[in-house]
Length: 122
Image (cartoon, rainbow, N blue to C red):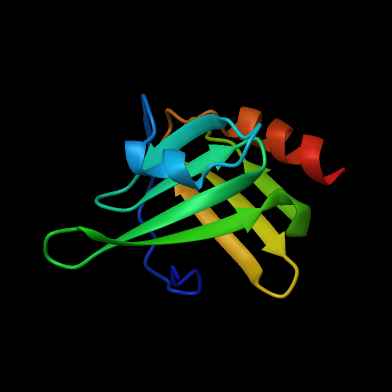
């Protein structure tokens, strides 16, 4: 599982498509909304959950998939980018897990992600 309590955070950058290895994890009716990539790790937002992928090892073949369902979100916070601060942030508070924080570069659709999460937790 990804260490969400670690202080070192990689800023995620929007990608055009999610890696193909995510498709077998999707359930019926689940669609990918957007995908963001760090250096090796990536995060995929679907209409049902967040899938955080931790790429491990020298070759990157070993991967840890962490599923974070919107049904377990108790609260969340969206911080949009500004004039001098070009990064945006998403904080999700999960029951039994606590705070999960994602930081994005300026070219993210953080408001759309917030709308999707709102649809499923409100």
